[in-house]
Length: 458
Image (cartoon, rainbow, N blue to C red; front, side, top):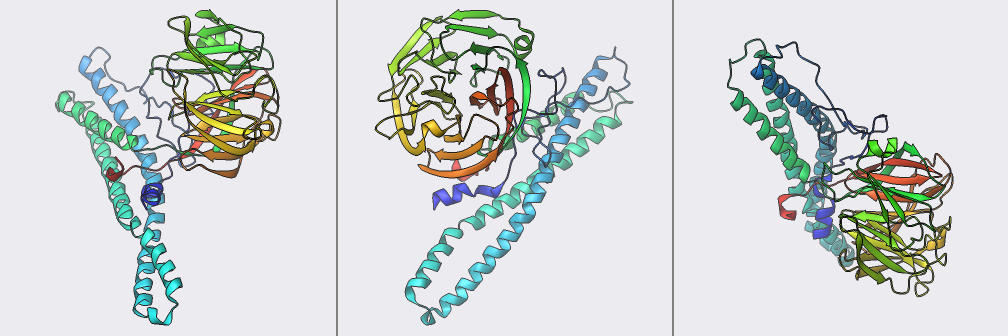
């Protein structure tokens, strides 16, 4: 019952994309930024909005403050407008469902009064199904309350924007600090609303955006999903074998221009392209072994290494493209993972959650999907998504949830622009897929289905 209630909490489809395919610039310009959860009804992310310049005296400090404040309110207003549009759309669906559920409840009461005419077994089964639906009614009531709250936010921002606009020609008519506190209060409430978003289920992949063309046909590039907002370092590892050099760049812009900030000479050669940077350390598969290495960039040394028991290596159980891709290391919102295959599981994919410090396997799941039939795979919110090919026409064909230990076949296509993918990894901070596509470093947007947590879930 609890799982059913949690799964259907508020029934809100919140489309989040880490990047906007229409943007050609990698780094945003200076200016107020809209929250990453603000999108239009089609799921496109509003990354940066800068209000038009106001014709105010630039030498007046209070005038500049008010102009900045107005820009911020305008951006928040656009965020709320988009959120309100999606909420109102979903609210109509919720109202319809609520009416249907209440009608269903009334019918069951009528049937219960006349249950003597029904077979006891069938009646009991129907009654149990109805009991499972009953907890949804208070959830729907909570959703209606949340919808009213968003409307209230929208009205408050509209009023505040009108006040700011009205005093641009009469600086000092209102107390700036009071207005500033009102904006901060609204901003805090909006952020709190966004924090209710839980992990999501993959619905769509769009793109790609080509960031750079460099290196051989095979390789890996990545950023750290646990890095701070100001830390945008990029790491670059060309080729799938016979290499130990990792190149570091301070930002995406430096990566595009080729301005290296540092290089690391690893103590061991790596195997494959399925490495991951997580919390400041590089995790990779040591060449010609099933040993996982944890290498600290800050300390410049190996912090841990451990054999992944029974894991195939050196092209025993690679992805469809080969390249010693037997062991795939990845990270998501939950933590660090290893994806591989064993003889004990008949060459099918095994998922293991790893301790990021000791590399010990904390828990494993045996799937029924052959590792050699997979093009690539990646984790999002504890669910493994597997592509059926590395070539043109590839799509996400299979998923396995570690939360429920269940699988399903999916049909989520994506554009393999350069015809050969040798690396595909999800970055939880950017909410994007990093890929190495035939010597091109590209990014894919992901659209996730989200649910909102209620107070009972915290």
